[in-house]
Length: 191
Image (cartoon, rainbow, N blue to C red; front, top):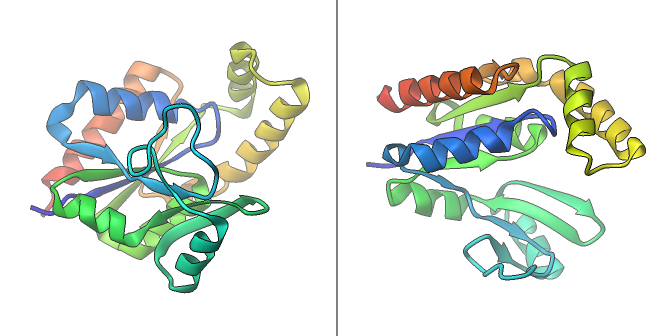
């Protein structure tokens, strides 16, 4: 049976990655697998082509853009592209994997538009911008300037939340995990 798709987006610091990793690790019965994206950056550390990413040159990336082979893509910096190939997603679905897209808000909206009812889109939202500030400051990994930039971006991204199928407010991580699991299971039961 062909796999389903889960588009999960959130502002930085909302707990999206924590929730997604928990789902995939603690619930193998869901047969979830990340979509393997493409990038034009060089591999880092032990990253392998076709495992973490497909590594392309900027020229190869542009060729695939011209041929409309991407579900979504973004040029983050000059010649630094990230994107999701339609063909790769279909390959994973044919293998029976339920494909998880851990993507930015605009990429998430584009993937949902492309697949419609075949994909469920989830927006993980912090309870407030102030709580998000507290979390980002608590990480102690960013400068005050970087935190201010992330908060401004988060406020902007939160305006897109109504375009997602479901919004999970993460004010309690265990409750947010449980609600996400319930939504995933409900979607998997749909024909």
